[in-house]
Image (cartoon, rainbow, N blue to C red; front, top):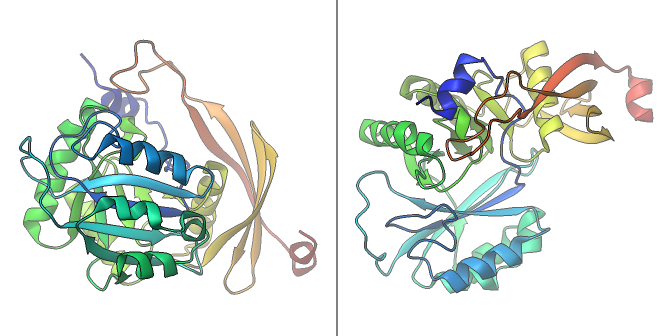
Length: 314
């Protein structure tokens, strides 16, 4: 039986504009098994999972569980667990971390402020601070959500961890199972699909130099999906690698067509036309889907650099 990732690869489905959307990521270490909806189906107290899901709505914060690669015995976590918060909007990118023993303290965070890029409550409530180590490579491995994530994600996470070249974690859900193995790299928040160990190492090497690798890139989680596709198109068109060089300043229109305006840190602007198409022929959007689907795809149809006058008027 064909998997969703095999079908997506065979049909050469583009990955650009498919990244999960989150201005800020809040990551909590939770060893042991994960269910399909891990915040309420793991050894994390379900009441805490439900409270976090409710608390982050409308804040721009996305919560996920993480664990170190390897075998996951059916056991509860020890007293200490790692927590990270990362803001991914260019111009204010940061990654902070800490260790806590009581995960219910997450409910004391000012989540609205975190979503806007203010790390002060994370640092004051949890005694956190800037993460000074390697960038985080978060590999989606939740086989209860989609078997491709387990079949392809777990070997990738294990090999990356064994190499010692990265700070590697398994993560509960990044969406886009059909692009497995999928990886989110923090602090900048770019997601990647259909990656192998050598390509992730290249991506992480770029991040250490504040560069973004476009190949295999699904987009920056800071932007909605039209903005993700538009930003990657401008990067490709002008050969821009600097991590925080481009920002989405406005998006006009609605599905199936948007006009996305992007600004460069040096003052240049572009307007990018993005159209929503559908992938054909129908294919499984996930291995658990009971029917075939036609997932939406972001198609960039025009990239135009704006004059100074037009940029000021936009």
